[in-house]
Length: 189
Image (cartoon, rainbow, N blue to C red; front, side, top):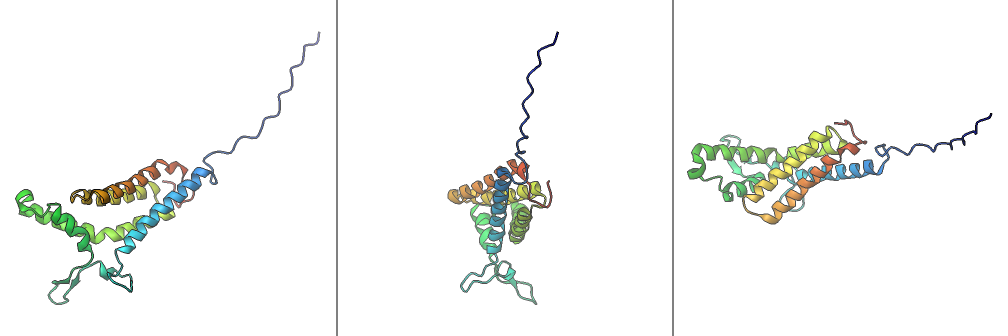
């Protein structure tokens, strides 16, 4: 006796495209977010080198102090002072009664070193983010830069500016959460 034949299996449809491919919406969205965050850092860092008055030019000399070549004394403070001085003085870090004289001096050096290196760090990390070099590390460093600036504003207290800087930090948190969509980069880390 012949057994009833089973109906032929319908031909299988092609597999759907993998959502993590190089041309997925997630990959393009992450690329756009990454480039935007990198440009924010690069332009914010470059702005620190802008001349204080028109016609605007850019030079690292505007950021750093001008010193007498012979005595090495500061003849004109650079723009870094506008970043560090308000937080240092109005934040209360210059109070030797609280921090001791040694502690206050150490804090003043920390503020000086942070402010002097800030634009270079912003530009370097921003470029690393744009080209996709060590994404996770660069995004973490970028978020840390904005968070450190927010912490300085919180000591003043300048709540609107601190809130804005915390929002910038949150963009980096979002980018770190979406790094799995990284497809257009030098490194995949």
